[in-house]
Image (cartoon, rainbow, N blue to C red):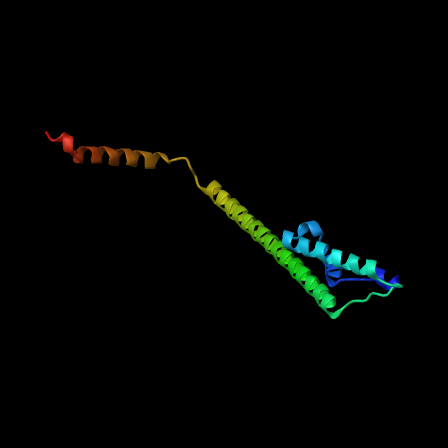
Length: 141
């Protein structure tokens, strides 16, 4: 029975290496895992004297399932990487926006927001002159 218990698949090693759980994967990949487990269990149940008798067709089927599962895992890893990259990009953008905001905040503090007395007198005189010169549509006399 030693051989029957030592059936290993590439996807199991990949999942351990990348710290991926079955629940993380998409439903199609999960169904491949279930099907492969059923085939493996069937082979173990039919093992005689601890030796597995795998036909070439069954071996091809197992390899195809294993390959499809690995592709599903790689797809998941690519999606996870894309999400992490976008989070990193958004974190970088947030940091840049904070830096710009702090820079603008510092430059606004340097500006004197109180109007000087000469500026306000000049502005009043300009407004009075423009009021005298401007004749609106209704102000014709």
